[in-house]
Image 1: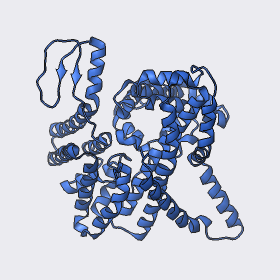
Image 2 (image 1 turned 120 degrees about the vertical axis):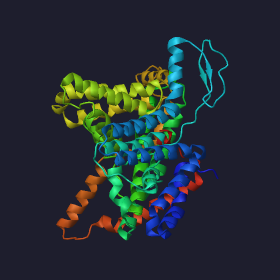
Image 3 (image 1 turned 45 degrees about the vertical axis):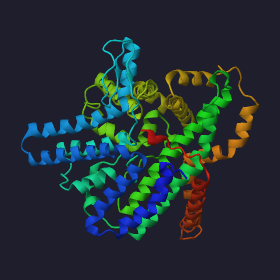
Image 4 (image 1 turned 90 degrees about the vertical axis):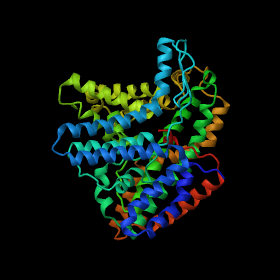
Length: 490
C-alpha cells in the first residue's frame, strides 16, 4: 500500500510515541529531532539536507549573535544571513520557475538553463527553459518558523538556544513540520527545556487529534470528491448552479482539510507535552473579511503582522503608509501560498477588500444586518478560493464566468444528481463549519445544569464519540485511495 503523508503520520504515530516515551528524559529532544527527520524523509528524503541547512544556519546565526551581544554590526550581519538564507531557499525552490516564466512572457528571451549544473546550451535565443524543481514539502512553514527565531533573538524577545539538538527539535517536530501551525520559538521555548507526558495531556491530545483526523478523512475527503468532479469539467459548458455547488464544496474541503491537520498537530503536541497555538477559530462565521483573516490560519497572519506589517510601520504613519503596508503584506501572503499569478491575484483580492474595509467599507458593514455581513464575507471568500485552486488565471476567470451563467444554463440533470449524492455530506460540513455545534452544546449543558444535573453529558459521551471517530477514520484510511492533502503543497 502506498500511504499519503497524512496516512503515514497516522500509522507512524504509535511507533514515534513509543520511541519518545521510552527515551530517557535528557534525550527527549534528541528523540523529537530523530522522529521529525524520519517523518520528513518519508516525503522528501533528498531534501532533508535543505531542512537541516535551515536549522544549522539559523542556530549558528543565533549563537554568534549571542556571543557578540555588544556588537550591533555583528548581530545585524547574523540576522541578515538568516533572512537571506531562508528567503533564498524559498526563492530557489519555490519561485525560480515563476520568475523565469514571467521573464519569458515579458521579454521573450531564451537561455536554456539547468540549476543542477549543466552548462547553458546557448547565449542568445527566444525562450528561457529550466529543469523542473521539486518543491520540498512544507518549506514555507519550516523556513518561516526557523527564521522567526533569529528575528526574535535579534529583537531581544527571547533567550538564545545553545543546544543544536534542542533547536533542531523545535524546527523539525513531526506533528507540525509540513503544514503548521507556524510555531514561534517563544511558544515552546519553556517546554523544550522541561516537559512531561501526562495522562491529562494524552487524553486531551488523543481527543483533539481524532477530531482533526475525522475532519480530514471523513469530511474534507468526501466533500472534496464533489469539487474534483466539478473542477475537471468543461467550464465553457458548466451550469451556473453546478459551478456554485463546486466552489461551495471546495470552501468546505479546504477548511476541514487544513484545520483538521492543525487539530492533529495540536493534539500530537499535547501528547508530547507542548501547547501549540490555535490556527482556526470558525472562520466561516465571520462578518467581514478582516474578521475572517483573524480566524483563518491565525499563525500565518500573526507571523506577517509581527515580522512584516509592524516593522514597516503598521498603521502608525497615516493612511497612505497603512495602505502601503497592508498591500505589501497581502502581496507576500499570496506569494507565500504559491508561485503563480493566480496566487498573486488571490492575495491582491483580499488585500483590496481589507484595505477597503479599513478605509470605509467596515463602517458600512457595521450598519448592516448580521446575515448580510456574513453573506458578503462568504461570497468574497468563495471568489477568492476560485483564484486559489484553479490551476491558472485564465481557468479561474472561466470558472467565475460559469458561476454567472457563461456555461449557457442554470442547472442540468447532472447538477441535480450531484445535489442528491452530496447533499448529506455538504449539510454536515456546513453544520460543523458553523458555531451551531458549540451553541447546541452550551444550550444542552445549560438546561441540564438548570435541571440539577451536575455532570456534563458531553463529558460522558465524548470518549465514546472519539473512539467511534477513530475507528471510522482508520477504516477510511485503510480502504479508500482518495486522500489528498492540500497544504502539503506549501
